Length: 187
Picture 1 (cartoon, rainbow, N blue to C red):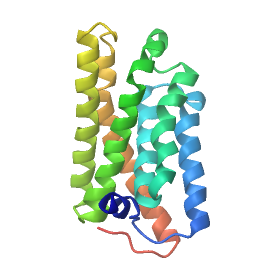
Picture 2 (cartoon, one colour; picture 1 turned 60 degrees about the horizontal axis):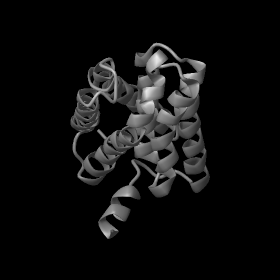
Picture 3 (spheres, rainbow, N blue to C red; picture 1 turned 135 degrees about the vertical axis):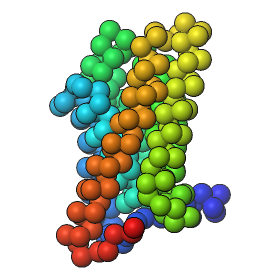
Picture 4 (cartoon, one colour; picture 1 turned 90 degrees about the vertical axis):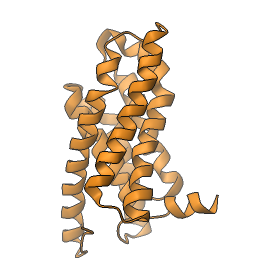
C-alpha cells in the first residue's frame, strides 16, 4: 500500500494545492465535455481525452485522478455519439475503459515519474498497454456476441493512435505550462 501511495503522489514538478485542484477540475471537465462539444471524429475526441489523462498523470495526485480516469467513458455514453447506434453496447466496456485509462496513467506515474524512464518510451509502453488491454477485452466480448464487430477497431488501433497523439499534445501542453511558470521540463 505504501508503494502505491508513493507512486500516486508523484508529480512532474511542484504546483500549488490550488493549481492542482484547478487542473483536476479542468481535466475532468475536458474528459466529460469533449464528447458533447466535439463529438466526431473519434480520433480528435480520443486525442484530447488521452492528453487530459496524461496531463493528469503528470500533475495530479492520488484520488483526484479518479474522475479524470472515469469521466471520458461516462461522457461518451451520455453524449451517445462516438459509436452511433452501438453506443448502448459501450456500457459493457465502461469498467474496462476505466482500467485502460488507469493503465496509461499508472505507466506515467510509475515509469516516467517514478523510474525516470524516457517520456517517449513511457508513452509508447502506456499506449500499447492501454490499447492492448482494451483490444483483448473487446475481442473476447465480440467473440461472445456481447459487442458488435466495430468495437475491435475502436478499442484497438484507434485507442493506440489516440493515446500516442494525445501524449504528444500532453507533452507540448506540459512543456508550455512549465516554461510559463519558469520550471525546467524533464527530458
